[in-house]
Amino acid sequence: MKEDKELEITRFKIIEPFLKKKKKLKEIEEEENISYATLKRWVNAYKKNGIIGLEKKSREIGRAHVW
Image 1 (cartoon, one colour):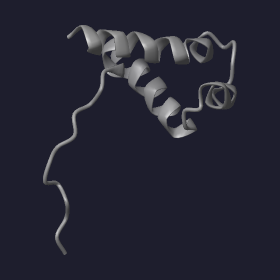
Image 2 (image 1 turned 180 degrees about the horizontal axis):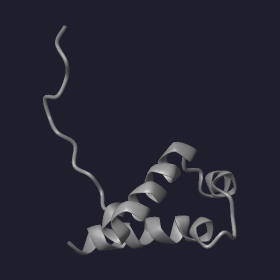
Image 3 (image 1 turned 120 degrees about the horizontal axis):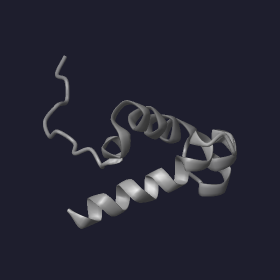
Image 4 (image 1 turned 90 degrees about the vertical axis):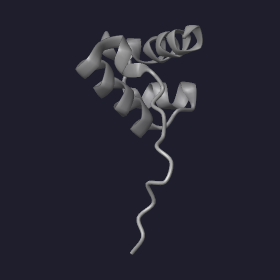
């Protein structure tokens, strides 16, 4: 979908300065107001799967554990 592609591109543009070694993730975290953990997850997903790794993941319903 077009929205998914736009999201992938937006996420890539956010982490691109880190990938090009121009900024640290902490700087991007402060500038973009996105958590460090999220940025790190995006970087790892990009390194593993390329731009497609940055697509929005759907959540599974009903995965709560019953103890």
